[in-house]
Image 1 (tube, helix red, strand yellow):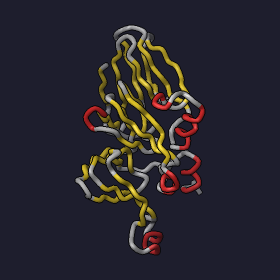
Image 2 (spheres, helix red, strand yellow; image 1 turned 60 degrees about the vertical axis):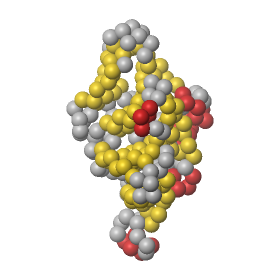
Image 3 (cartoon, one colour; image 1 turned 180 degrees about the vertical axis):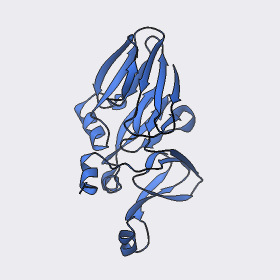
Image 4 (cartoon, helix red, strand yellow; image 1 turned 180 degrees about the horizontal axis):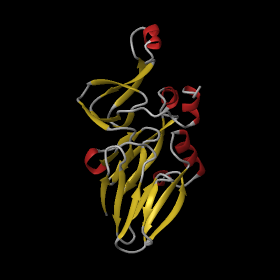
Length: 229
């Protein structure tokens, strides 16, 4: 399978060229166009943890969709184009080279090849950091594609190196990175009055990807933490 990212960095789309039996798993409602030789089917939750209602519920609580869409080529020479919901770039991560990653809520777009996707419990810090109750853990030998809001920035952290990031901007980070929810400043008053509140502190080693714009979360927890009024 071959892929290319077109029209970046603001209105990016993912174009995939597929031969017979090749499969793409994607976020529902992301298909822009496809040729006639592609079979579309739907599954509940993530393949990495089996198709189940609980798997779908965990995805939903992590800011993802309850279902996933699967595109399978019925013959050679097929083309599929996926378009993110956001106006921004598309990040590709080669898991065979980069290792396992955590994706934040709403970041997942699609994956190809041998990928294992599982929703991992993030506890209350996941909710308070606006990432949802679960994070999506991806591993394997395939490729995963993430959607961003704005441009994508990469930050490589050395062993023990710390980096602070507003919670809404994170896209993905290596599972070797430790993250902790902390106050933006030492003073609670300054944290609140500056408008920053709580931020995430990432500690290396590993790679962190983040975006240049923050889109309000659309899941239940994001609505409760960031009501539109």
